[in-house]
Image (cartoon, rainbow, N blue to C red; front, top):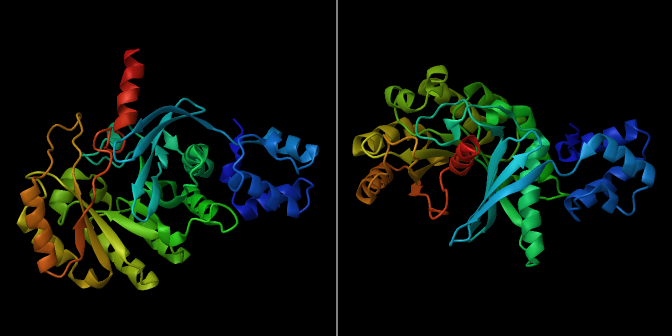
Amino acid sequence: MKNSIYSLTFPQLTEWLIEHGEKKFRAQQVWDWLYKKRVDHFDEMTNINKNCIQLLKDNFVIQSMDTELKQESTDGTIKFLFTLKDGNLIETVLMRHHYGLSVCVTTQVGCNIGCTFCASGILAKNRDLSAGEIVEQIMKVQKSLDVKGEGDRVSHIVVMGIGEPFDNFENLINFLSVVNDQNGLSIGARHITVSTSGLAHKIYEYADLGIQVNLAISLHAPNDELRTSIMKINRAFPIAKLMDAIDYYLEKTNRRITFEYILLKGINDKEEHALELAQLLRNKRHLSYVNLIPYNPVSEHIQYERSTSDAIGVFEEALKSRGINCGVRLEQGTDIDAACGQLRSKQMKKRNIG
């Protein structure tokens, strides 16, 4: 299959065109057509000569996925299910906030991290997405907004969909470069957040890049025994090793880090867990924020239930009383397949039945 042209950063596109006999200025023209005019076909690039158009068509595609399903929530959240050229399915979500429009993107087909509460890992990782396939998720959502003609613009990105972003590191970094480019989509680095389940060695590498993109850690437990029981990644990167990497990141970047904590009834939502979490983060309080997340039940994981509102309130207050910045995440899309990976899993089951 031909590669997605969205996989190329601007310097890579410039170098490729020059290597193939085109002038340097041609890259900016192509870039404008892709990200400002947002064309679907190379033939729409009317100020590009025919030889260059043919060169692009022979080597790249603009569209590498189709919209299979689209679910719209009463709160404005839209979940897209995309079919890739090899038949695999991925999910992307558009969320409306008071500060703008945010898109949650997927980085892998399936996931091998093995979090026992998560719908994304029900189906094992099939492959990594290319940088272009990650970029195209943003483009598909933006083009759906363009059709409405209301001038809406994707302003924020969260890399928290299906897969482990740091397990697809090179493509992730190229994706960030493309969407952040000021001559294209120009989505500010501080408006982008990447979430990892805790691949410590990649946190060091990420810190060394010196980029301004935000980092979030899927923690979900305050001690090794509990975290290992719900997240097998903790066997490879136990909390002490993870915290060492986080300390390096904080020292290197001086940027605030978010700790994601899904609350599971009777599992990790007791006051004692909150106090243990506060103790774990005590030396990072000035650069830490804990995002408390009510659990979205998944039919395949019936052993888990959503924490009660009272338990969530006690947990939040216990953290705040110890000086930990925290809050309960606003729920969106609860009337559609809210949990990450849920829509994809449901559609895969239908395909197998069919």
